[in-house]
Amino acid sequence: MPLEPFKISNPLTLGVELELQLVNLSNFDLTDASSDMLHLLRRANFPGNVTPEVTESMIEINTDIHTNHAELLDQLQNIRDTLVRAGDALNVGVCGGGTHPFQHWSERKIFAKPRFKEVSALYGYLIKQFTVFGQHIHVGCASGDDALFLLHSLNRYVPHFIALSASSPYFQGVDTQFNSARLNSVFAFPLSGRAPFLLRWADFESVYFAKMEGTGIVKSMKDFYWDIRPKPEFGTIELRVCDTPLTMERAAALAGYLQTLCRHLLTRTEPPPTEDDYLVYNYNRFQACRFGLDGTLVHPKSHETLSLREDILTTLRHIEPHAEALGSLAALEHLYTVIHEGSDASYLRKQYVERGGTEGMVDSAIRKFRAHR
View (cartoon, rainbow, N blue to C red):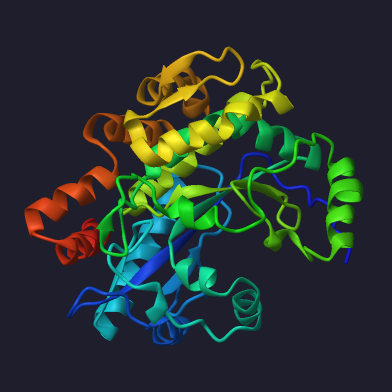
């Protein structure tokens, strides 16, 4: 089936998807409660969209299309409050975090949906191990060419979003020594990683995608698990590297940062992206996953070694005029706080010590999710 044409959307509009954990409040393990949760939420006036995810211990929420950070934050907070009320009615905890710290993948159940059963048959145990939780951010693009330009221009900033959102230090009961262990699960899939270096939508559509479809490997864009991928049916690019944060406030701030950064990049005052930029991509990505804000990166143009924390701070200061124009200064202010106080991964490790184990970490994540209600 040919790739559908790139739908033109209003540039720099925003949408967010969040994968969330459903938790048994007795033992703080994941619980297979998505069917009950979805049934209850369909009867409520849900302020967005909610769908099942691949296993029954998770759900995904989607916002409407927004033009600024404040509108997006308001809807995310309304969604949070609705989810908390539903969870209270079912005696189920809802929380963020990129991984559940001690659940066992072998105990997960695949949600009864044809596509999920299809990918489960293809990927085997990897699908149950894919019970990890991410934030996806969509940014509207005026054309397919703009989408590919932004996609490749953002390669240099992918470590920023990994480090700022990192919230998956524990996995299968063990401290992984990573700040974002979730992305290791994503990287296991054969069509993960980076998109091919193409800057014209016509080439992507009629050459690359047509060839891939011809191999029988892919049927649609859903089959690509790239860190950033174009979504022609929405007219967006979709950033997929973020762990699900512990709060809606952080989720909105990350989206505001991406929107502001895209506005800056579209001025085309930065050197244009090239294939050689990707020489350092996997190294930089690893540094952000492993060390978070304390990592280093290699600049793709100058090959200078930089402190990731200082690079984020420099970038935030540089794009403040764009944030002011978009009404997103509050988003950047939130991220300045993350830089100085630490990420959600740091918070969770602290909770492990203070609460005496992984169950206490989960309880803290549930409380943090609902704290601003």
